[in-house]
Picture 1 (cartoon, rainbow, N blue to C red):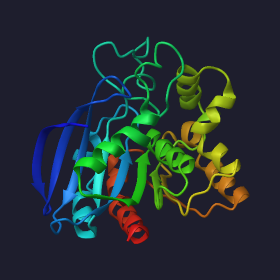
Picture 2: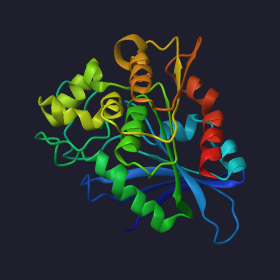
Picture 3: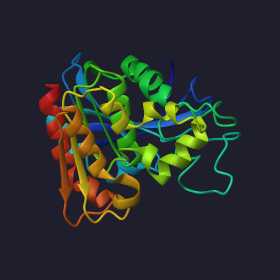
Picture 4: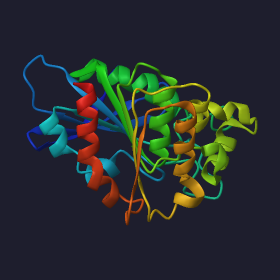
Amino acid sequence: MTYEMLSTNRSFGGTQGVYTHDSAETGTRMTFSVFVPDHAPGAKLPVIWYLSGLTCTHANVTEKGEFRRACAELGLIFVAPDTSPRGEGVPDDADGAYDFGLGAGFYVDATEVPFAKHYRMRSYIERELPELIAGHFPVDMSAQGIMGHSMGGHGALTIALRNPGRFRSTSAFAPIVAPSQVPWGHKALGGYLGEDRQSWADYDACALIEGGAKLPDLLVDQGEADNFLAEQLKTHLLEESCAKAGQKAKIRMQPGYDHSYYFISTFMAEHLAWHAARLK
């Protein structure tokens, strides 16, 4: 599996790269970023997968996430993929809305026409991209953590829950925890998967937890001033599901913080240190 380098920059004693490759899953060109701290020759490092939210590309966290200093100090590789397929022929929301289509892949494998051909972000993140990263970067695939923001928090939670034993650590910033119960999820899951709600359960963290899926541990930070909290995020539903199922979790409400990268970057280093403690 080959890829092309778009750019590299030195940062905090490591290399920040942006790369592109032809994806067999999405049938499109996909872009991702990877930060690799300097390390001993032949050494392999733990890897953190970061999944971004609605409207984002790989660039949002790469440019605004403030993760490189912590990753360099902790010895973590940080991988940030795009949030959807892009390019000529990739269908978008008919009305150009931000919460469906381009930039809003919701980390599902779509089954509905015309989205099923390209919108295969579940398989891309779970299988194809890890194979590429494992083949070309010095990652220790026995030491993986996953994290994400908003739609990407939903992706991180559901991917970790569906792949028991693969991720030693899972965390999220302001995740969509129960897409089956909120407008963003109704639109995305209905549009990509159809109206049979039983098929939605694989992409609903609360449903997966209540159905018996488990994580070794979970860390979630949610801003109390987040304007999406009441209608779209509903963090209390995750707290309730974890309590019912006996899922170990630290879910923290952060006073004054909103949904932005000002919030994410504030707690990023703390999340990375939490992951590192579980990966090493």
